[in-house]
Image 1 (cartoon, rainbow, N blue to C red):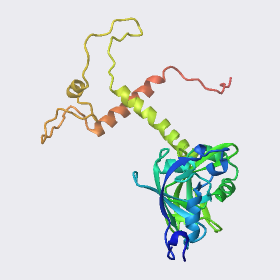
Image 2 (cartoon, one colour):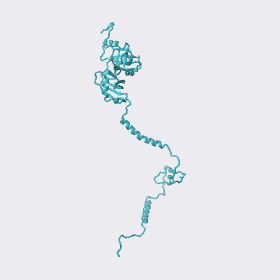
Image 3 (cartoon, rainbow, N blue to C red):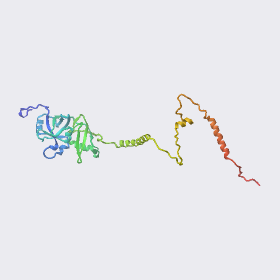
Image 4 (tube, rainbow, N blue to C red):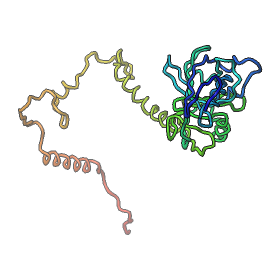
Length: 303
């Protein structure tokens, strides 16, 4: 196929150009909100002329590359009304590509597989206020031609802008969403905290705090003087429990100073049989001492 100036364009030739890129707000004329809320760009008329001479695959999809930052995304085209040598992009797309006003952008046409699945993560918990997020997203994606994994797209709903990160796309990292049946999933919004998990953590902290306080209290010792309730002066001597154990050798309390390997037989402790006998004798004595005096008969004697 031949064009003017005797230039021949072979079949399947690729469109490959570099343009100065600007945000949509820099486009001369009325403000174009329809471009800002979608995923399509505005190119110059010369690009359309070249594309029509090439055997390009429709719909027209393009790969956008910022070679300085090694950033790549994909987009469709909305119109061919830009000034020559310039292209206009949505602001969110310029942020993904790390572009400044007037930077060079490489554009080439590309063919992408049709999307079957995509997963998004809202970048704010405010997205949970939307009653039917899937319906809102489906309506917003009508202004997009393709999706790229890793991009953060912007959608507008109820005069608010919501950003969503594209976590996954199938069957490839970049897919076409024109006339497709695509399954959509949402990841928990960035910064979202599960109420059940937070409640469980709160309960665990409530149980942990008293233990921490006890541990802190154990680090302190009580110092000062004690006062007796009966008003008498307390004894100045302080009794050591080890000394008490050592002197008294109370049964059941270990002797901490007992040398290892030595067996002691305490002869001062009476056998259990003797102690039981003494207890029984004591009880009998108490019973005998309790009853003294003369007895009386309840029946009256006959006269």
